[in-house]
Image (cartoon, helix red, strand yellow):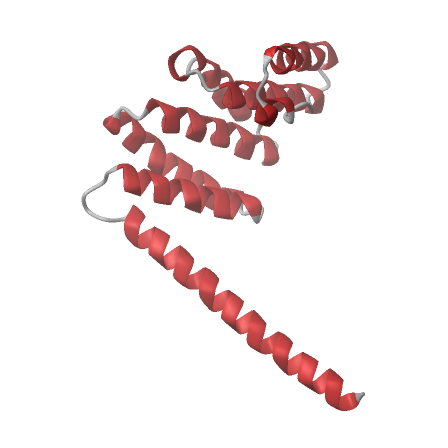
Length: 167
């Protein structure tokens, strides 16, 4: 039994070291792409992956840092779809930071992109995020309004990925 535990412990240490090393090289690669002197769509993609990486780990200050670096690049490249997605990510990040005024500003700004990019998933996700934000602010009638908007879009859709967005 002791031999099994010792072997399991050593295996766990080896696996955790390899996992940490893999994450480090992943982040290093993304940073290398994101910080090249010539910025292009690959820089934006790398910055977006960095945002997602830090957001999923609850490291919202780093998420904001990379989102705010990516946003002006998308404007320069006239990449409206990624600009909308980053704006949405900023709204979600500010919501998690309990900075509701900033969250509302970015989530509202996301709405301006809908007629341009025709991204229904982003539209439904934004309505759901605005509903959550309104709920956090105890504005329940507004939360219900956003949820009804989201539900109406979902009901009209025949796409499975959109139908699964029902909160």
